Amino acid sequence: MSLSKQASCSDFYLACRNGDTETVRTFLRTLTSAEINRLEPNGSTALHAATYNGHTEIVRLLLLHQASRSVINVYKMTPYQEASKIEIKQLFRCPSSTRFLSNASEAHDLDWVFVTEDIIKKAMKYRQKLVDMSHNYVYSIEVIIETYLRSFALTPAMATVLTYFRLAIIENDPTYIVRAYTVESDFYKRLNKDLAKTTENILNVNFVSFDAPFLHYSKEYGRIAGIIARHPKLKYTFIGIVHRGMQCSEQDLRNYVVDKRVMTKTFISTSQSRDLAYEFAFGGKAIPVICKYEIINKGTAMNIETMSDHSYEREVLIIPYTVFRITKFAWKTHVDGKQMAEIELCECENEHKNNICVIL
Image (cartoon, rainbow, N blue to C red; front, side, top):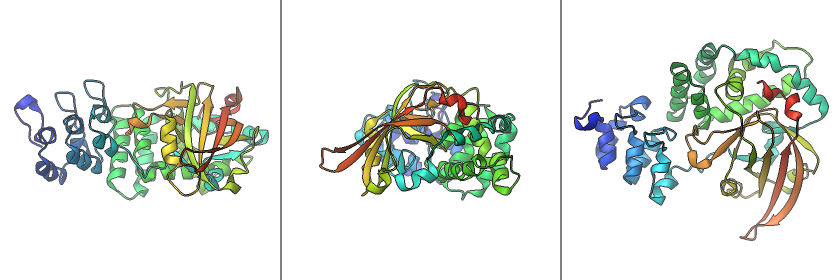
């Protein structure tokens, strides 16, 4: 990619800044992800420039080609934060995202399990083994790339995920793995499905299994979980209230009884914005449910707003094997007249000490 004399910024960047849509289209046919997301000498990316200058169509094209939404420029701002036009801000929203939404009929299989003390005790046995899986950070990521990630179809979104994993090695920075998780792709969906599926196998055996499911877990996606949940550079210090949307039937909701405990089996994406949870919960025909989580222990949740490709979501990530108690269940009527439910869950005090996520 050639460089312009003006501030040594690339011609691609200048086309994005100046609103030259046809030139941008031409560049996007051949540019790599790294070139699209290049931090220019002036401290901004092409997406920052197009967003700041209000070029809606160029912003749409850049996002379509997986331009990174999470790069912070010299002014400490993400591209979304640079936007002043409402229509551009809307482009950053991902209505197809399911990270903040659970289907209650699947939640028991994917998100959490209603627990007894016995299950928690069984989970404790695997703490140190799971820690050991991810001690060799660089080797672990190399294995993940060559085995787990290679099994995905190479869509533009997965190309971005792969780029983030490579950058995690090059820059020795695990925040890129978190960024990969926030990309709207099949990666986070399959990761959580695999974690949930294998978790039950692990929790219900009395010895370390060497069958195929356990080996895939220990060599591939278990390593991803280990890096995201317990790399020392990632600070799980969030304390406070977060929200998540759910859609379910009245029959599904009968499982949610006050004082019942649930344990997360996967990573749970929540938002500090109640309004965002509403957007996801009311997106279907089923009964909308708002889940309100109170995080009281350090080591459970991490604010990933500045790491996410979607900073407007104000995401807080809850790690696997976190125990909550249902403290409130209530039926309500929304302003549009639709029946909805609200469930409040409080993290169990000190339960996290008996929780595999503490050292995962």
